[in-house]
Length: 248
Length: 235
Ligand code: FES
Image 1 (cartoon, rainbow over the protein chains, first blue to last red):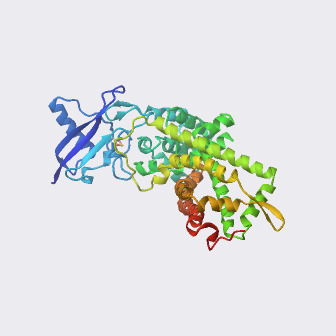
Image 2: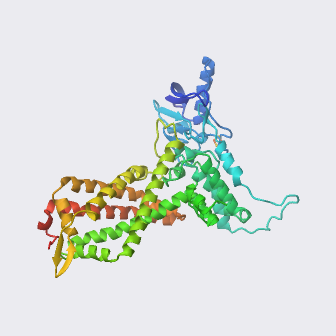
Image 3: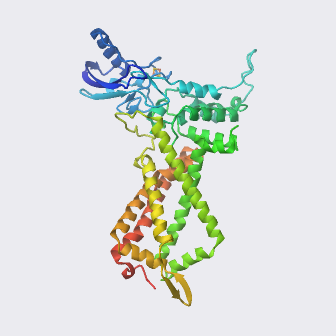
């Protein structure tokens, strides 16, 4: 099994008020089979043994479905691979002697809590503003009551795959949340179940996105490139169409 | 429900306005370029075209007012987007790079604010030089014309600064439109991936053609020696 030496330059920040700084670390015997986060686990074990504070970073599922992980690696959200969350990135993508710079997503709307962990509750508030549908509760609904055309359900599901990691914001030169908001809107707005609140939802979620202090979308399309599930910027145009329809 | 003005001030509304004013300005410069090419026509063709435009009277003023409003709105929103983006990321990345693939990030997209501000300053100088410049009155076939063509030729034939200044600004215009034309359509809700790919390519080609069309004239006048030039016949 081949192992390598990896140099790390990691953003360390005690809390939201600390100005933060980069710290250099070197890890020997990194296996190419390790995931990127396992490599950080090893670093943290070493740090704990040394009696220093481990590097704080977000994760949960480690299988690319929860959207908790979100690191900016050498200037790219989720690292070098397309359609790959950082928890699914493996060290075989790096070579012996590489220096890797790890930063948190940087956006005013995502304040740093500690080290590489940021507060992404701005996304939750966008969802709260309108990311729901009204359903009849009580008895189980009849499964085939609402027919949905295959192409519509496919498209809606493509948008529904958004895991809310925030890589779109991290990578956007303007720190815009247009892809996230667009995907969440399109997912519901395309389905028949989403129609009753369609206009209200679109206005409320766009409004909340503006309030949270994200930047404007300049159609750089970088968000699509870093999205771990490959959501298309068509979501943004879909959001614009629905918003304009709703206000006119 | 937001009021109409509130809706226009939202992120979506602002982008819509930027897109629509941007496309309007693109239409304008296409006409502008067609007018410029009249310099290669009959000796008095350019002056006749200019006289025709002035003869439109109130209509010309409506067009001018529309253009000025579009231009100011476009610039204003553009600058505010740039301003918001600075606020939205107070702490910059130490390392930043595009991930490529489907990304449309390019020198063109990243420099919109810079190229836009250069164009803004340029337009003020440009209008002052030509639209408000001193022209001689000449008489051709018993009719009086203000000799705009001669002003254009004299300006470029005698000034390397103007000639190369214009050339650089026109390259920046092409750079602005390389991202701008496609981006306007996305802002105006173009969703299909196929159409988007076509519009991106056609928009970029269009941007190059417009820039080349505009910068060719000053360079040609400067290097071919104004009225001496083979393609230009003067009164
Ligand atoms: S940890 Fe769940 S997606 Fe990466």
